[in-house]
Every structure is written in C-alpha cells, then in structure tokens.
Length: 461
Image (cartoon, rainbow, N blue to C red; front, top):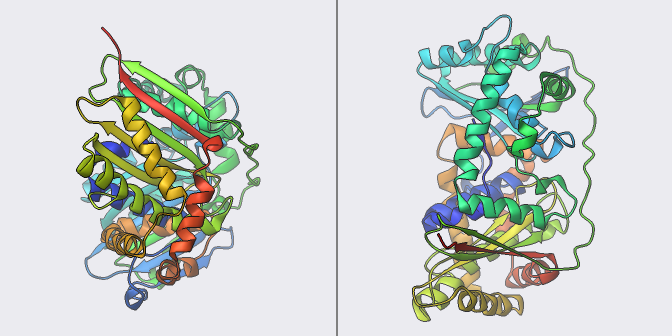
C-alpha cells in the first residue's frame, strides 16, 4: 500500500529514471499514449458500462498469459473531510481487513497462493486497487475485489492495529526524511486554499483522531460502482471480461455518489520562501515550485509543452541546467526539473539545484534563477525541443512495457473524465507542439508570485 510521493523526491534519482517517471506523470495526467502512431492500435482498448454505472476498459495483450486487474475510485486524499486528513489512505489500508465472506487476510493470501501480486495506492485524486495474476485466475481477483466494494467489515481491533501501521508509515516515509518534511511545508505554502496543501497520508494528530465512523462514512459515500473504473489489461478478451464483470460487479447497486466540490485556489500574489534545517541533511539544496496548469485545470493547452519544457530545462545531461551549472560553471553537483501535470486541479512545476563543494546555496540559487530567466524570455531552440520530444516518446514507451503499466495509464485517464480517444491522439499532439508553444508555457508558469522556494540546509548539532 502506497502513498503518492512528492516530485521533490525525484532529485535523488538518475536522469533517465526521472525522465521516465515524469513522462508517466504526464501520461497519467494528460491522457496520452507514448507509442508511435503506427503502433497506436497494437493493443486497442474496448469499453463498456454496466447498468450500475461501473465503467470497464479492456486492453487485450496476448503476449503472455498474464492479466492486470485494477479498480479505480474517483476519490482521493484531497477529498478527505476537514479535520480528518488521511481518511482516504487509512480506508485503503482497512480494505485489506476482510469481509464477512472473505475474512481478515484472505484476500492477500488467495492472490499469493495463485502466484500473483497485489497492492493499492492513494493519491490526492484517486484510490486504486490492483492485482496481477495468471490470466486464468482473473475471476478469482474480480470476485474478491467486487466483494469488498460494499461488504467491508469495520472491526475496532483492526482499526487500532492499522492505525499503528499508518503512523509508522508516516514516520518512515516523512518524519525521518528531511527532504520529505521540506516538501510537506512547501506544499502547504504553495496551495493557499486547495486541499493539495495537506499530505496524502495525513497529519499525525489527525490520523490519531480518525474513528471507525469516519471511515465507514467515507466508504459509504464513495465506494460504489458508479464512482469507479475497472481496467483489465493483458491476456483477456472483451467477451470474457464482460461476462465476469456482469457476474461479480453487476449485482452491486449504484450508490448516492455526490459530485466532488473542492475549494479552489485564489489568485496568488506573493512569492513564498521556506527553509528547513536538520542535522540529518547530507547535501543542501534549493528547490522551487510554481503553481501550474494541469491537463484538466487552468490553461490546459500548456500541459504537453510544460512537460517538454521540463526536459529542456532539467531532463538530464543535455538539459540547460546541467550544461550551464554542472558541466560548464561547475557550480552545482546536481540539477533537475519536473512537471506535475497529473492532478485533477492545478499542478506544479519544479526546479532544483544542489551546490558543488566550495559554492554557496545563494550562488547556486542565483545561477538557477539566471537559467530560468533565460528560458522565460524565450531562449529555447528547435534542437532542444526535438530532443525533448524524442525523450518523451522513448521514456514513455518503457512505461507501457507491462500490463500493469498499461492498466495504470488507462485508469488514470478515465478517472479524470477523459476518454480512450484522448490516449490514441497523443502522438499527433506531441508532434504539433512548437517552440513558440513551449515559450508561451514558460512565460505562463515562471511567475514568481505563484512560486515557493525551499532551502534544505544542515543544522548545527
């Protein structure tokens, strides 16, 4: 069970891995498909909707006798009740605690006995449950998942044991990581009003206050077939999936799902700065995030250009930041940029620099600012854009090299209200981006008034 992480953490990854992750983030947010146009129909998707409102997508891929089954709910941590941060994620944990038909631990044991694997995740916008098994075991996981959609048992003993697990997860992933702590405070500063400012896992004092009633209320409001998308990718046919979905999900009635109503951001008129000092910091860094449009919010026409801009600015050894600050001036040991365009509401654009020995953080930040200013003023070449396009296609193809990756792509796209057609149109959308488009995106996003600068420093003992 996982919580979606901060893009700031990508700074510790290699350039190619960062590129692949960023490409997948855009794939998931911008409803895109990284395959060349000639291959766009290689694994076509079929869709249908059950009478109860459950959307179903089938992507047949018979290269191996394996299938991925993913159930996506259109609900996430940004929909947590006020004062109960962490409820969506806590409920994700509780979903493994059993039903009247399949007791505690039975779900995971059954999947493991079949040689499969399963997990779940919570992000600000969605919650997902997924299993990968041999294709002849598809009915088993579908029966298990459909059962816990409405028949979860809320056991007080399980509540307290899982609370301890969630709190330990928070300690391991956030409280012991100076970079993650800085990231939390930067998020809180970036969003003045929107719930993206609150960590997915929740604040510790609110996790401790979550009750069974809170969890049951959240479950009863959101866990219904008409608030979900089922994606099956791999060695399965449309006819098989349709029959199994009708059998196991079909009897579940539609529920009283309400339309999401989130507070939105007011105009941001002042830049913000956050500084975090910790004795555990090994390498200081300066990081900046800008409020940015996503593929579904704000100036959506900038979404694909912003990803390409991130590659031009900080996508590895050929990027502008690396060439100028690391290779040439040798003022930095590491640089990077990424675009978080996968959010349902406004996203973020990130830039970071770690100074080289003998150079101050102030000097590194000033150098970073000079590069950003040049890009904002239009210093982008056709060669840089073409390289970024090639990198996008190459990296995202790797992201589609598994049935689970394919299922993840389609699920994310459809839970954002987009369609299979959006996915298939991606190659042409990338080809159509011009240098002028990227320049306009840079001018739009690099507005200091909508920025947060974070500095991570080593504290004195």
